Length: 424
View 1 (cartoon, rainbow, N blue to C red):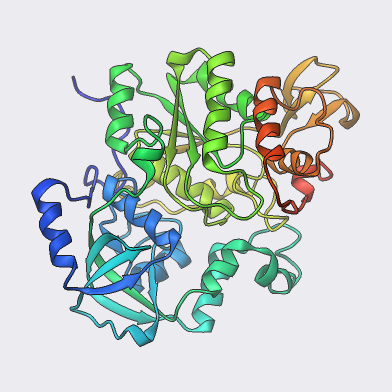
View 2 (view 1 turned 120 degrees about the horizontal axis):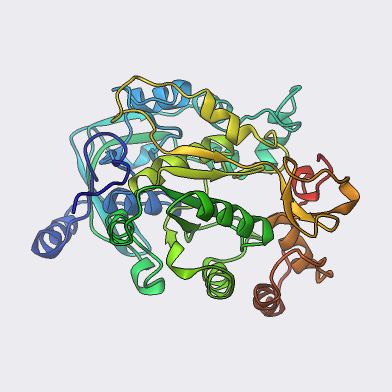
């Protein structure tokens, strides 16, 4: 049976750098004699995605030409669309040079070997330029000279990039581990090959993805059900890598999604899955990244709602939708992004409409609307505040309250304008 799904990004099929069996065993043995480079959690996630084909067509870390092209024009050196840099930083004192083979390790586990094809310096000015290209938006905290007043302390993506070491290494990798994810999230941690097989078995051709880093509230549920109505099915795809302090851990969120699907969805129209990346907190650019790697999973529609992947008030409410209209195209289907946005307006529960609605469908005033956001939900749960009616399903909220009751240390959750509803 031939697949009706969108082709993987890059025109090369699924590019999987993961070794298995005897080949993996031999490479692990070889890695023992190589220079050991300790990697970050972000790099670990990037390697696993390269391993399973989630970052197709990438087979390694970007060159300086790729890095520059991605930051400046959303394109790698060969013209292939890519929205955020995928780079590997090391300290100059490691002495790594072009032509070296190295082992990439984290917490005692070897995740990959790498042939270094190029090294390039990242000065403070280079890092700032990357931040301005990738993280600066059109929200009130980015404009009128505010970005560099606020971002070094308040934007986790900027903090991450500015803290990177001063040398980037480029080159292909051989991935040797999928980390803890297959064991900790069986049936949820799915590779692109696995989701594609599941979609094909269900006869799906037109598939939407819902990106989640928060538990599903009523707006998320509404977005997913809109997609179910107009597509063959929906992949509810949550991040199971690292988040920032105050975000809800993956196992708690995955269980909340399972509860919701079991009680409020037609099960055969929805798949609950997770992917192993850390958030980059790149706002609109991250929305593009979400669409890019979802194409590799077999998805051709990316649900993009209000403040998708937003951080504070650095981005306009619908900037993550608008950016899809500005990305370059080459006319080559292999190089251009084929996963398209499903743009959904601000959604909420309206007491007058007596149901979920959006600014496109609800004629009533703000006083009738229950504004829903993951940040607002996390803040209420963290503060032990009452959660307003119609915010979430009772069974899901009970599960989340149980998690928050188990915490011994409270993390302050910052409430931005988009989450509070002030900017509606």
